[in-house]
Structures are given as C-alpha cells and as structure tokens.
Image 1 (cartoon, rainbow, N blue to C red):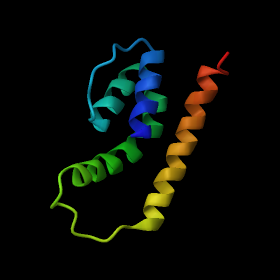
Image 2: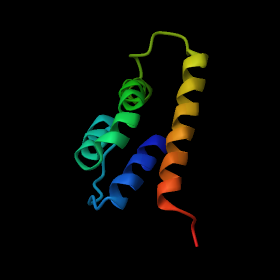
Image 3: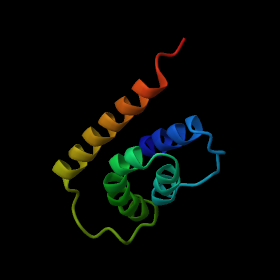
Image 4: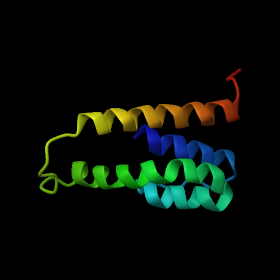
Length: 93
C-alpha cells in the first residue's frame, strides 16, 4: 500500500487529479506522462508488486512459498523511492 501512496503523492504534487485506483501499473503510467525519469525508477518494482497485489487480493492464485529475500529487496526499493519523493517535497513545516 505504501508504494501506491508514494506514487499518488508524487502525481498530486505534479498536478494530477486524485482518482481511486489500486492499479500500480496505471499509476506509474500516469507518472510516466508527467515525469518519465521518476516513472522509470518505479516501473520495474510496480510491475513486480502489481502481480503480488493481485495474488494477495484474490486467493487461490499464489501456489508458491514466499520469496523472503525478494520481498526484503522490494521493501528496500520502496524505502529508496519514498526517500526520493520526500526530498522533492521538502520538510514538513
């Protein structure tokens, strides 16, 4: 969920009108229209996580055990992306 909110925050910062969606690929496509360089940072992770989100939301599709090293890497990538966006926004008064 955090990755979705980070992307939405960056989109809103760039003048996007908030819409209700859980579709990470759609959100990163919206970001690509406004900032291709930032979207390129998010794209690979969003595609990976979009598949994961689907299997978590709709049981019966995930037949494999968790890949904990991969999940740890994804969490680390999200943290880096969040820090990138936070630096752009600046300190909260």
